[in-house]
Each structure stands twice: as structure tokens, then as C-alpha cells.
Length: 414
Image (tube, rainbow, N blue to C red):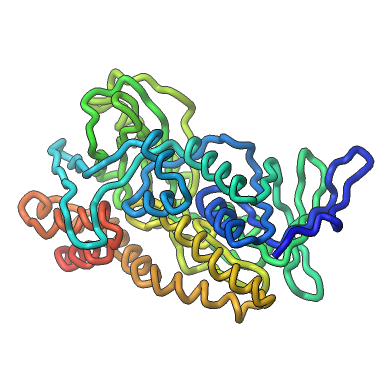
């Protein structure tokens, strides 16, 4: 696995018109950067691209679920996370009547330690991008992917624009890590009638009192089965926002509901005197795994592009990194054996379905239950006196394996 620069082509001004790479990773978020890092470590010639120039802002709650720190540590980023992130050890649920219910971190088994991190995505994604480059991957910012390229009926690269000029990138394997964007998925014939499952809004604020080592999750009945949040990023600063499962609402209606919910959140006593730090950002979220095909000849799909955003919590960084790692392992083996057919790459889809298929189906069913007001009322009533509800909520939000907690919550509601 080695680079072949002899096939690259440039115009008279020295600008690239054609680039060859063994692997092209489209999208440099956590999933794409993880795939690029591990493929480079395996010795592959990797080019990863993104339409943005880094660092860039992302509409995200900035929370890293338990286990994400271990994946970052495996890539040598543990010190960076500890220096720039903020540890959380529990969840503070704010009920509709203003009552608070704390879910504290406790030891719950060999692989479940119940803590996570909050770190701004602008910092995390840029450091992951730097880390992949340090491992040997090449990075091209400002590349807007347009169309797939086929040779003899097989995917062989992507064409796009850089500073308004066309560029073709030829690759034996394409790893698609384009997040919630539908454009390239549609042009590859993978998207179908796929629509965003959720919407999110976020904003940074400062001068917030009473922040501690708990994430605040606000159960706003007008958002259910979504929620609002206050996630501390420092002693007095926080990422605040709202997420909404569309559940029949169109995106325009959903956006209106989110903006109204954010105004309610900013009017709560804790945030009334806060200082807004930057502009409001929003985005769709896709949690429809496994609706999109995960592989085909010369292609693997990772992270949110594969619908891998938790349907309940909206967290996607941990799952994106895990899928990026798996894609790199499968791709490395396929490259070594010079077999990038769908048959060779199928194991990637099989393992992802084994890891997440049952959980995502059950989680979507659970959010559908919570969209009914009577089910929400049952959950709220029982959260005050039924330890199973507290245990279930803890497990869903704070364990590496949330399936157990989801099963418990479903049994309570039924």
C-alpha cells in the first residue's frame, strides 16, 4: 500500500485537476478522521477531504458518551481531551414542574464506568484532523463533493470543486463520512426517500451559575420525545440547545418548535443573566440506521452518513468513531488482499448490524412511545418513585451499553 503521485495532474497555474489516492475519505468529522487515522497507520495512502476549512463550528451538543475517551486515547488524544474537555459524572433531569432528579455515576460492571466528556466540536474535530495528518493521511479542505466517478461500472472516485475549480479524485476505495448531508448519498443511489429523523439547535453561553459535573437534561413536554440541554463546557460557560424528533412534523414546523423551546430555555432562572457567546447553529440529525446500504463495490459508509446517531440521546461522535475504526480495519484487510468488492466489504455491514441493529430499532420504537403525552406522563410520574426508571435513564445516557436500560424503560411503560 503506497502512494502513486505520478498520476496526479495539474493545470498551468499549478492547481490540481486530478489526484490519485488509494483511499479517499469524504468528510473529516470524527468518523472520517478516525478512518483516515487508522488507515494511515495501517500504511494505506489516504486522502481525506472536507468542504470546510478547519477549525470550524458544528451544531452539536458537544457531549461525548462513555467510551469515546477510550477511542480517542487509542489514537493518542487522551492528554488533549483531558486538557480541553470537561468531565461529567452524571445527569440532572429537570422535570416539567421544575423538580430535579439526579442520575449519578456509579460502578455498574466491568465495561461501564458512567462518565463522559464535553468538548467543543471545533476543538475536537480540528485536533482529530491534525492527528490523522500526523499519522500520514493527506488533508484537502474546501473540497465540495459533487458526483461519483465510475469505471467499468465500479465506483472509482469523486469529482468536486475546490475554490470553484473542478477536481477529480481517483481512489480504489471511498469512505463516505458526510454526516446528515443527502447529496452524495443520493447521487450514489443510496439515499432513497430518506429524510432527517431529528433537528437540533445549539448556542454557547457564558456567565452561567451553578454548573457542576452533571449534564442538565430538560424534559420539555413540547419537545418530547426530544429534550433541551445545558452541557457545561467550563466553570461558567455551557453549550445549550434543543433537540426534536420530527415524528410527523415537517422540518419547517420542527424548526419553529425548536426556536420556541430555546427561548423558553433561555428564560429559565439559571440562564436568565447569561451572555450569548456566538451565533445560533442548527442541523438535521439522522438516526435511521440501517436504512442506508453500508457498503458496495469500492465504498464504505460511516457515522451519521450511515444513520448512526443515537435515536434517544442524539449523540453520534462515539458511534461515528467506532464505525470509522471498523471501516479502517475491514478496508485494510481488503486492500492487502486487493479485493474491494462488496462481497469482501460485507463484513463491515454485518458487524455494524450486530453492534447496533437491535438497539436502534428498539430506540426508535421507544421514542415513538414517548411522543404520546400519556406515555410521557407515566414516565415522569414513575421517575419520582420507581428506581427502575432512574436506573433505565441512567443506563441509556451514561452506559456504554444502553440496551439494558432501554429494555428496562420499555418494561415500565408497558
